[in-house]
Image (cartoon, rainbow, N blue to C red; front, side, top):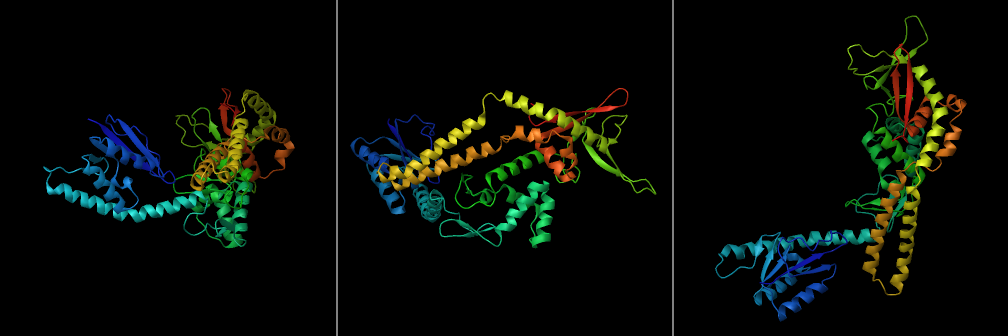
Length: 437
């Protein structure tokens, strides 16, 4: 008994199927990607030496129209080949089969005809993706639809840019949302604001519904450096307790009690008939019977700044020495290699080595890979750590900052601040930097 199989997929919008998916011992697998040259070879081979069985996933893989599918189906079955469609519960009827088999085939053919329009739409969307054209629908806020790409909307793009600048300055999503409403009258929800911060559109890229991102498709509102900084802030804020990401105090969400491992909250105390206000850090949900006492916020802040000035340059130096292999250099080299290949594709098309469809598909895959590499590159620490460490190692630098500005720098370098209590009732700090493993 001889069994063959046929697979078809359009790589522009479908996953390329593996050859070993049948669960049967197959003598030969014919596979087409985009065209159907192997199907023609299969038909010719079946005329010479017909196999016993032909395995398919679905009958519509035999052609783009219902007439073509029915014609090939009749041609193959006329030479005694039994066809089995694994995903449609179809097999070639025999003389002993009941009329239900023919009825099932009619339902499958009706399904093929109804799905044809959906497939044509997906093929059209896939062609647009290969040309890096915008997806269907209204342009995102800040852009207008051009002929073949997004173009900046001069009236709304500055609003989006100001939103990003505000977030980078104060590291507060809710405050940035309120700022837009107050200054521009633009009302958006916090969820929409978060989508703006993570949307590749504002970085000059397009993300399609299949999850692929194509880089440099239109003018960007946010630079790559600013986008990388936004990603780092969002990633570090996600590790903080709720409602501390945009808290007004710089130590909010960073301090932890070493004894009970509870997060500290900031409380204000204002004695009666006293203008002065006192700030304390108190552990939330302390698990000890003898609850951990609060500590002065001002003292913790002062000691934190002192330790940063002493320890941060050394921590960065140790981190740089530990990074004997710099992943940024490898990623940058891989990006440069793929960009060189991408620039060479038009020449290959002019020389006739690649046709238009193959060139578009290759360019699409390269640009999607470039987006993934640039995203990996953006997640790494910035290159200018050493100059920054030298600048912020002076106590006067911290004294000149506001609380929101200090909050930005703290979260850029600090993972946790552990408050360790000594036996004599005093306490000291241990700062865990983002470089520490």
